[in-house]
Image (cartoon, rainbow, N blue to C red; front, side, top):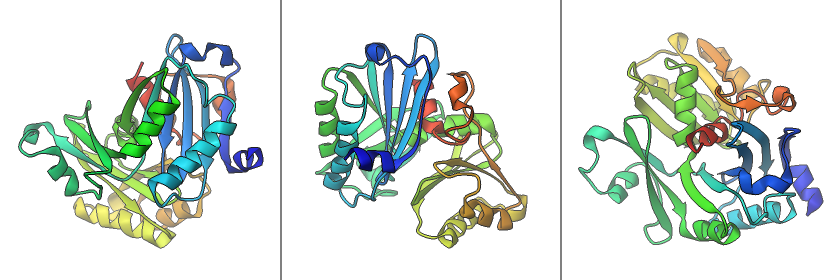
Length: 292
């Protein structure tokens, strides 16, 4: 299993100031996706990002398979199975989510609203509702079995649950409030846009298999937003490298394609100058800032 853990790593970067004997002073941030787990460790006392790691695994087709993947990583990891953390923050990157603008909040029940955009089981999934800084609340679901597993794993720590879009969008808009932002995972893309008041006007996820799928969804959203590919600025974030062929394909059809930068207002040691790349882990770092 140690070999599997090593082979599945996408990146693993630690600050020299990361002290494993002080985990009770740090917050742990786990971004959970069906095909990858990303990890962040934060020192709130010094406002420093201490560690960023990412591991890929075979896409989990159900909750049990996802828990097996997570269990295999946690049990062989050097610090993930530690009992005491200041806080443990679970960041769902699962596709079930919806934003509710403040002006219509309360007009319908949460389950009905979420069912318009997402597939979930009212018996097996738990609905979370968090307020945001975006003049909207976010609804998202997490399998109850997965929530219970986290509570058992980190029974001695305070747990919080959020969605990756909750921390990604504010950081993306702060970087460029006029761009169409695209967060790429191995098989999922998240697209979001805001208006001049920095309010969310579009946020959705799409599952893709090929570069052609990816291009289709981006062009589809541009059309939905009444824009044109030639006049669109697209900013890429996520777990892909800048030489990824999918990004090269997008550049052939979109007027301007940029990559994002690490969020500001956070200390990074020199070890983070090379890895992970600048546009990775934005939602994890954003979650650190939200939970200072």
